[in-house]
Image (spheres, rainbow, N blue to C red):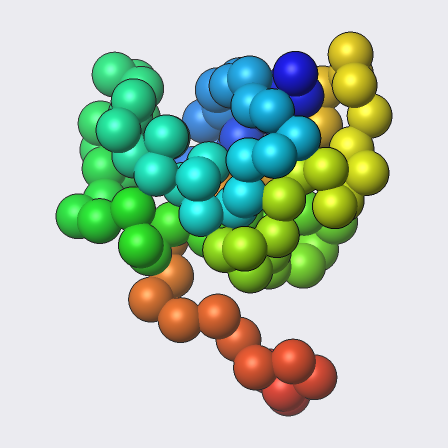
Length: 93
């Protein structure tokens, strides 16, 4: 199991446990389906717009935690943001 601490833009955090086989899309869906009570103001309309940011990069939906080589037994911090589309690689702005 991999422990993820997800941080919203508002600064609120919550920890979740995932398996290395879980993809960014799986995580977004799980968080959406189990939206924390104290995140009510940040509730989104669809899991499809939830994006994970790890080490400053947006994760594509098919990237698994195992592929990121995240450490077991430690908490990995990621940011969770609502965005319709991913930025283009190397785009200015």
